[in-house]
Image 1 (cartoon, rainbow, N blue to C red):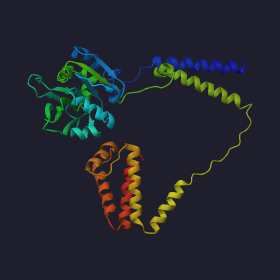
Image 2: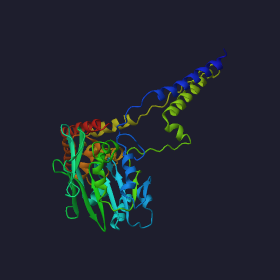
Image 3: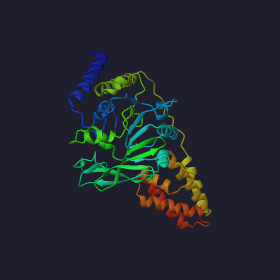
Image 4: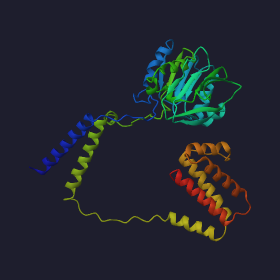
Length: 391
């Protein structure tokens, strides 16, 4: 058998195997929270989206795959709803201004999210907190007697349940609470329109829509929105994915994707083994060493040996600021309590240690004299923070 034919037969066998194995193997259940209308997974929202034409029969349902600013455009829309369902709702400042203007003109925005942050949360004065449900299921119900169910709508155990701890009580109306009496659904009047805010987005997913009679809860929650044209957000979803290549269909199908990758691997192996006999030996060129870290270490020792602890504190603070901006997209002129809270939420670090770190940094920054012991304690706290947050 000729060598080329042998390689081609091996490659063909690998391609057939790569296609058949994924087809014959059942796919595991995807429990990721996508909230997308395109996903049939438990925490997708296909079922909710398909129910919208029945709830808003007098209006048109449009899936918005662009940011708020692009979706709403320069025109002034009237009698329109905008529905957002996601784990975190933190639009860009330009999109936030557009959304506030949209609602202020008399339209409605329904936002279900675990976490509200950014400019919108600041404007609407929103804060949420969490309690973990390990023994009992999460229970939700409405305040309005005409919508309130005899038995609470229940959701599975071991669920994270969030509730609003702060909102504008002057312009807000509480629409729903959980079993503990915590507010999880409210209407917030803004201009001539209103925001409908919900802190338990999992209630609007496929799994819980088919769990007991919870589809009634979703229908009642959306009944607060006027029966009119409605935008369904697909841009801010966690599960949003876009494949920017002409092979997008091949890469979107698991069997074809694996066949494509195996084919590429086979071609590369073929070139590698065939090229060994014909290609001249390429000399190994040792790359130049990166001395940046050695330089930084030398500069740090210089400041330390000179006893310039105050200067070292300033540099460590500047490095921490750049780290927070690069890793968590956090930046603020002053490190106030609100900024520290956002660091806690995004980093997942222990709240007490984060607050202690920023308090120590603030104290040393304002101190006229920084001792060696203070500097060592600060450095140890920073190292723990970087290690915990994956630096």
